[in-house]
Image (cartoon, rainbow, N blue to C red; front, side, top):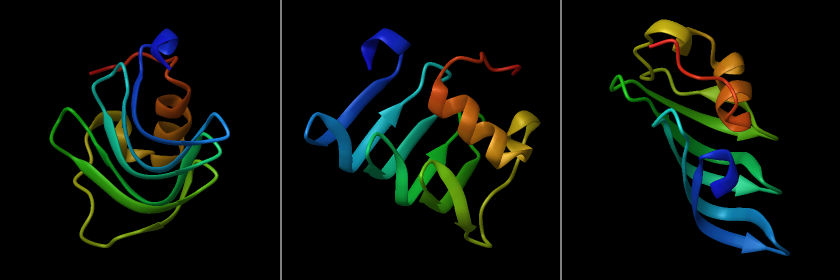
Length: 96
């Protein structure tokens, strides 16, 4: 993952990111939660540099259930599906 500017700290199964993990993106957004086959899958939280957090249940990299107490959004963070795609791919810089 180092080649994308991201850092993965967690378990692997058959060479794929899978299990409990911490995934640090180049934008300084941090995902803490479950991974499956290299994507967010299961319960997990995105922590944004602004202090916002996004608690959700993920399926194949997309949020399918969001806790009501989360989140306080700012900027692009208002669009969780877009953020998931952008942050998971680690290719689009933050508009901060």
